[in-house]
Image (cartoon, rainbow, N blue to C red; front, top):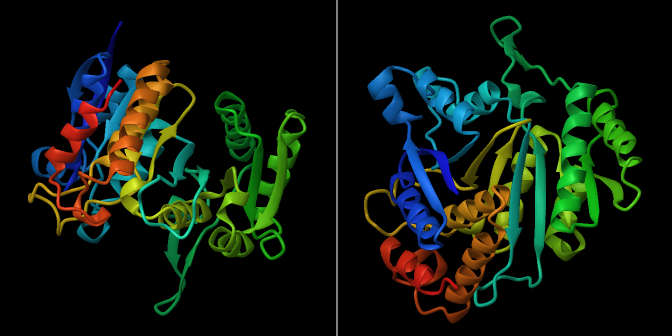
Length: 333
């Protein structure tokens, strides 16, 4: 079977780590036709739009896309291309996975936590306004329909991936209406999944417990802004933003990406760490039903990291992007 997948190279190091991830996918033997489209800085230069309609149309048609990190263009008059993509495509759930790898320095071992973030509502919807010349407000809105949808998606994903416990993040003791609605929606949906453990904790306690005992978490379901923060926190817990990977999901399409940003200071030097992008590509293959290829990539990454012979500078080595990609491809089985 041949898969047609939209590719967004992105900005900064995206233009180096995306080709690395595509090489690894092709090396598994899975047949893919890549359809390249633009978003971010290059799209503005060519189309005058950070997320041109031709890009959105490609993803809608192909149903699956992989993208590099995109520059936040808000200061230059453009809405965040990441937020715009999620809004235009109806990508209501964002998955971020963080796991420890043998061979990499970390205060912890045995951590493997998935953060599922509601990705369209909350204050991150960007609804703001001035109140007079010296004050401004951001609107935090939460709906029952979206909260139930993302909760049901999370619990189905837990079943599909063998996860057993979901912790709902909130601050409902203070934000009784908004976070309270998100929490109650998750509790209501949880009744449909008696095989899963669904509990809840306040966001500040989760942040504390993730540093103290991250092995205690399996999956975390969070409103938009909390989930964004927790995704970076869990990546730090396992040792590097360069290891955080995941995807965005809607009713009938998915967009896969790494957790980290564009890293302009590393761009163009051939030293960027491609592992998060490669693991995001593996998650994409699993989504397509190519679980054998996905597992092969994960095992190859595990082996390269465990051996510590070929590592990029952020992981304590001196390897180039190409060298670590070659090493991973060599370990594919």
